[in-house]
Amino acid sequence: MTYYSRSRQVVQVPLDKLLFVIASLYFGLTVTWIFTHQKAKPISIASTNTNISSANQEVVASVPTTESKIVTPPVAKPTPKQIPIPPVVKVASPLPPPPPVMTPPASPVERIYIPVYPQNPSFTPDKPKKVAPTAVKIPPPPPPVVTVAPSAIPSPPPMQLHKSGGKLVGILELGDRSSALFDTNGATKRATIGENVNGWVVMKIQNQQVFLNRGSTTKVIDIGQSF
Image (tube, helix red, strand yellow):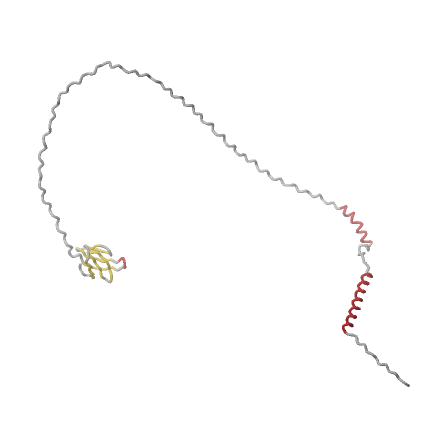
């Protein structure tokens, strides 16, 4: 017995083609299902309004009667407010201008000519009388002036030189208001800076000393000293 063996041929399909075929089939089935679903779905109209119970029908039937019984009061129309008219302000009319003052026309001055006739001389002038010369008295000459020699004018006494100005008996130091006490001719005199004491000017008081000045002479004295 002879056996013949047939070799089986394996057909290999590429993977990308297989995926493309599967995707195409899925897309076609999806589109077919969408169209069939839209056609089979009926357009339903809300029937809730048609299914009204008998009790509801009675209520609906009684609604017009109740509405007719309701009497709505008339609404009063708002009356428009009257706007007060402002009073008319009477403006005083301007006073008429005063009438012009009528000045009487000046009357023309009439000139009257009076004729002047020359007068004829009816008298003859008198001859001048001869005047006798009067004697003029000559005043006597003035008496001679007697000159008197002036008496000798006494010369002024010579200026006495300042003797001892005094004695410093005390000092009161208060800065610019410092003062010193001087004994002059038995009398105590208080002098501040700038005052005159018997011809001496107090220039400065400092350190229990007094600075005196007279002309170009300057002295510095302590308490108990004379100047």
